[in-house]
Image: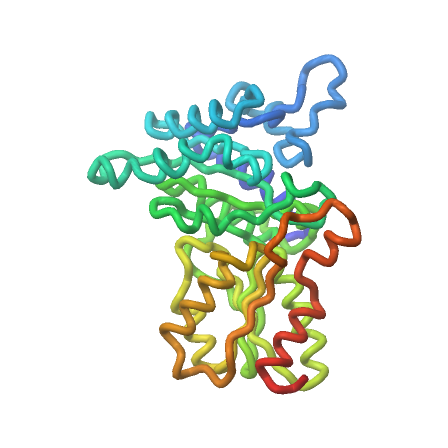
Length: 336
């Protein structure tokens, strides 16, 4: 049975249901318990944006507040995953990856390969991404392409409450390390959310909208920018097909190529940077494997190659917007 719920609720519910189902699932991170059962329990937020609220009350010591040391608790989560637990570690902001990167890319990502498939590391690292929250340059980046680059990691970037719940459940059940990226601006977004538990397989893109004129591949929050642009362009007679990869590793290359084969045009909309980002990667994929299907040059819509500004006005200019997506589509369709 589905009801309307927020992206934040979707993440919380996935954690709740998986902890109920599997007693090896544990949560660790900074302020994930949030002072529950202490004096002044108004501090019991469940993380800075309340995503894990209520879980300590229900599961007790399986929800562990940690010191402010990402290298310590991410390392502990990786180690625990090799010894029979299924930890979900919260790296509060993806920008903090530099503190604990060795434990992720040089250890967790390589264990299965280095030990001939005998070692499994079923750890999930939940982390917040994205600009638009007025959190400045050190708390606003979309660094998921860095993790996508690393063999052995799976990378998830959901765009809706439905996808967030199903993909997080799949992440917890997966036997490989997963980087689960939650765009902080989407937490209050509402959508249909089934009450029951369900898992969405990795590597299967979602066709958000069907169309014959141009393919728009959009990731995370940018799916909503693309959808609004497609609604506007439909009034001009341009029909956009929107593909949401949902996971960047594994990437559903077949669905992207299938869509481009049908439309002959591609616009990629991504909030990660323009250099070595997902937009560049997907554009390269299509240019090398579907060049003969293209009727126009590929267009990408990304932020500029600059840190995220703190100024409200400049941050809004930094983030790809609906008008930029519309302009890119008009360029490839010749309707500008």
